[in-house]
View 1 (cartoon, helix red, strand yellow):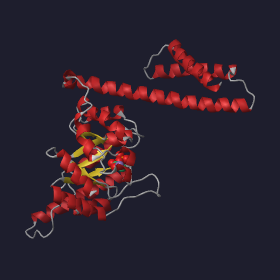
View 2 (spheres, rainbow, N blue to C red; view 1 turned 90 degrees about the horizontal axis):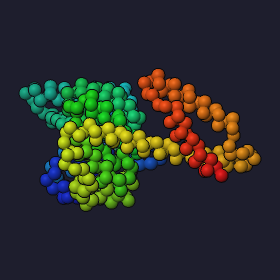
View 3 (tube, rainbow, N blue to C red; view 1 turned 60 degrees about the vertical axis):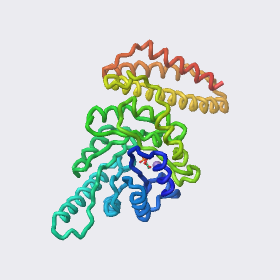
View 4 (cartoon, helix red, strand yellow; view 1 turned 120 degrees about the vertical axis):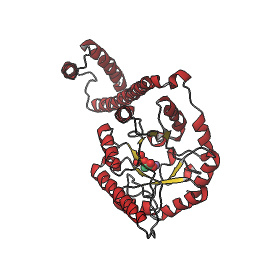
Length: 339
Ligand code: PEP
Ligand code: MN
């Protein structure tokens, strides 16, 4: 960790940045690396003292808050899994507020034996589920501490969730928003291209996972870039024209990002559907059933009429013919996959 910090400081030189490292890692499986724990906070202190940079760590419980603030973290961050849990957020917010008030009280007294606990900001990732209301609610919960809050768009399941981020940006344009291309893609190769979205969408910065030797990283190895690739990633892949960067184009850029996200989901869904089709094809072959079943075919066509009506109730008017044409195309390809 300290070697990574040294190399980042070296390549970023005068750029302003915060160095973050997770002492406690919320992992999917209990059988993987869970973080070093409290001991790692002293390594962060060493980074702060040696390189004069602000440091941050992830907190998921009030106990983490206590330890992180005592260790002099400049920023705290709330991970995507914790951000899906409003009760945890309430407790963390309360713990931060209580400790800061305690510090104020101590520093106001003549006997200032205790060290001060300044906190420059709290970063909050979007919840793992694409719920803009919950993300906004959590921002509000954290604001009760009086500490500036910064939103971090990390996407959902290695996919951007531009729709959710756009909603939060519109509701709270006063809250800075960072892009986390590393968790958004889960793929180091995709990080530079995703970074162009910072300019394109008028975001306030990025959170990028870096490791001086990614192959040895104990978590998220596939998405870590090397310090020496950081400057290139930050300056390359900016295909936008100057006009695109004008503020009045931002809304269009956001809407295009939403469209790209939906197209991406459409294709992923179609691909998943073809895969299920193939498995149905195998089952039919095994059981001597013909690929085209007229009764099932009619059933699905009827469902389209019902869906068309449902959409109308939500104010979305699509021609039934359009829906049938799209479905016919998909169905034709499904049959082809079954043969
Ligand atoms: C992280 O930032 O390293 C992390 C674990 O991210 P997330 O909470 O977004 O999964
Ligand atoms: Mn990570």
